[in-house]
Image 1 (tube, one colour):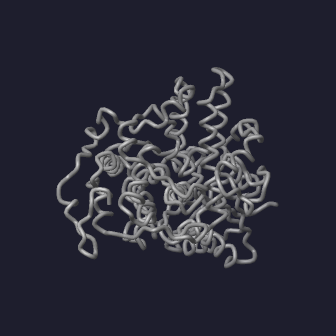
Image 2 (cartoon, helix red, strand yellow; image 1 turned 135 degrees about the vertical axis):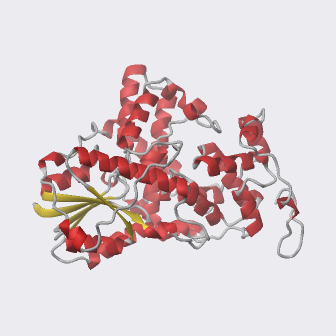
Length: 451
């Protein structure tokens, strides 16, 4: 079906390559305008008195958007970047630019899905609203079950989908859409509608741990698969703080500068050249874990954020502000936890092992409401992904996809196994600080060392 004037809304898919919906829009539209939106709600305090997006996560997103704008400019096009409420900005753009069709990658988060639903239901009958699922390794149509019948645990999910041989399902990454063949839109309508002011895309004064954009993602793919690290991934992936120990693809996957199928295609190419082993398989295994949480978020919607989780069974935890403050600021009674939280504040990133350790501490040692930990990660992590973040926190808290009812890690055992010489604790200054340990609870009982 041909559309005269299309609007492509980049949302969670900040890339031109391996973007089937963008290719569809380029084929269907005679004219195509490009926009990405920064949701103003992420700047305000949420119900946990935290911001939805901290400065490091925002800067990585800004850098990723700036890189996408440069890619589009090379093809002769402009990326409109606006900040506000999507449910207000998209209709304004549709009206100002006489848009006939709007394209957006299928949202997986509950708030994003509700925004899209409201736009579709509230839009003019003459406007076509097109979405496509394109942020997972496996697509819904390839699953041996409907998403509504998603298995209750990852193990059951993995056993069901592994016979599909994900690497064999991955077609070569699709080429960028032929955008140069589309006419450049005249956007005087934006000025007339008061929508021309763009978000400041100035790079940060100092570089972060990760560079934003598809080019940076491709460079990291080349670097990682140009080494022999994929052949040792399973052996090294639990290191607390080492750049080469894990794949580090998550920030680019989170904003969509990189697709899971691009990663899987490189795994297949690496195995063809160097041979497959348990470690190369484990990279696909981790992509399947990510897939599971994406489908999980889509399946359970608002239950992803419920205190009682998907079964509405609240855990026996509460909320103690001073304990939470101590956890956030690396001032608990646990040096390993303190070191990890200091690293998170400094870099916006934590290894998966460190995330599990600090999450277990918040829930099981400190007895705190797991949602505050999930919200703090949402604010801090440059690779924040609504499904993986909240799904994993439910998993640790025992209110989600874990038949064992939660994961409680022995902090002493974790320290002995992953930081036996105290190098990590020393590097990130995790030594116990005085002051927080003197707190009392609401009934004036002194807090013991084990919470």
